[in-house]
Length: 196
Image (cartoon, rainbow, N blue to C red):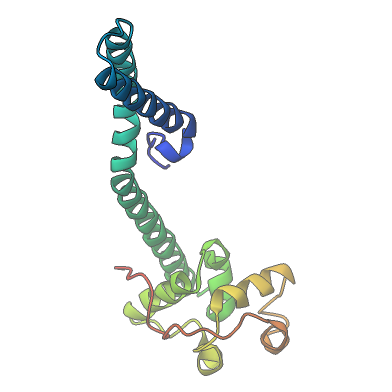
């Protein structure tokens, strides 16, 4: 579950607008007061607008300055969730393939282990690398060379959309042929690292 993040100033544009408006009014009143100090109303107005600016401006400024920290926290949460998804698929695959008798392996094993839950090519490759790191054969099997420079996320999304059965059909050539987003510039071993 994601932690509760404070709303940033980008989510509360009215507070930034009010703070900027209060600052502009403060500036105009200060200039008027400096130009003609005989105006009795200008000094109390400056104080009131200044207090308004502090009340509205400081939280907005804090939100604007705090945003990078929120983004770092959010990125860290996303990284951990990604590692958890990868670890879950890796563990599930290893469980399916190391039971006696083994239930499944290969591409079907990845599907049964939850590869459809992974959100990117790099997460899928990290799960495969995790499986291989435990001494198991690559889940890509004989398709390893043909899928090495393909976008595995696209490949498995196409398989999921077609409800492709890797056991009975076995040959995913039609998915490879139809997938428009298949080429990837990602090296086969890139992506998040998952410690098994």
